Length: 383
Image (tube, rainbow, N blue to C red; front, side, top):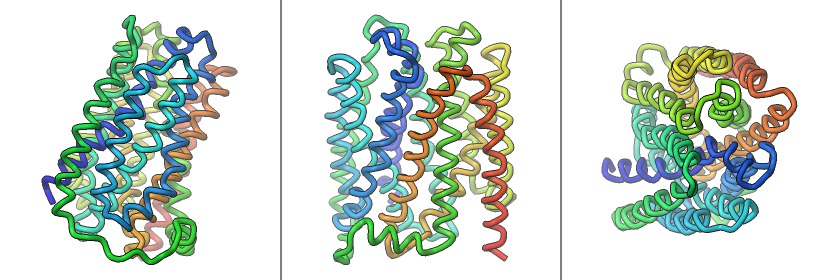
């Protein structure tokens, strides 16, 4: 089990890095293809939309054929799609590759979480999920950082080649590990839609998926435009602007490493409240930062805050429907990434009209009531 979790964390690193690698490239893409930022940001939204929609497929596949096996095959096809991004002609070709990569990266993190839910008891699950998330956290930050470095180079697409090789290696190793995974129970003969409706009959499941939808909409619209904000408003080179998100991962990693202690000390309700407050403060620091150092500090605080609440949501999602865990976690991921695509799309339009500062500040303000309402409902459920 431990080896499988390590392998899944490596795959989640590549999936998360694939999502964020184009964030710091947006100004370069806009310049390279002579389009506006709102048009260039389609490479982010296209990935996220495909990721969200493909949960319709991967949730049932994981429950039917085994979650590790499906993660392995999805990683292999994502590797091919990412390699296409390296050579694709024009922005339209790149967008097509990003959509395909997002579609198959969709089968990695959600099914990994569902598999952990299958093998780890609930009382021990939150710290285990937090440690698994170290891969995702690192991928989010390093993807943005590498994308920023690449954006300053003549050939700026080389990160896609690295990610393709990484995904291919993950595919091979996970499929080898899957040979020892117990065979799944026979399929019930239902569809994703019917199972999703059954999951959403539970009021608490509706609370979780709605909360993660709004969280994804607000958080990614802030972080996706952070490198652009620093580049356009503070004159920071794209390579350095992309590195500003590394502290975001450091904050998340700090939470993940000590998650067991934080869970015991605060519990889920207080962690959710603390998380959104810190996340909002981080957004304010990023938006109003006079220099890269303060922006990096804001990213550090925001990273810790985000994973405090998101890890709480993920842990609850793995228990929404234990008999339909693959579909339930896929539904959770679908709402999260559809929320991200909606958020980035709206933010692109708002940034074009009002600039990045009010968008990032607005995201921070709106996150506070979202987290506090969730915490209140979680406390009522535990009472």
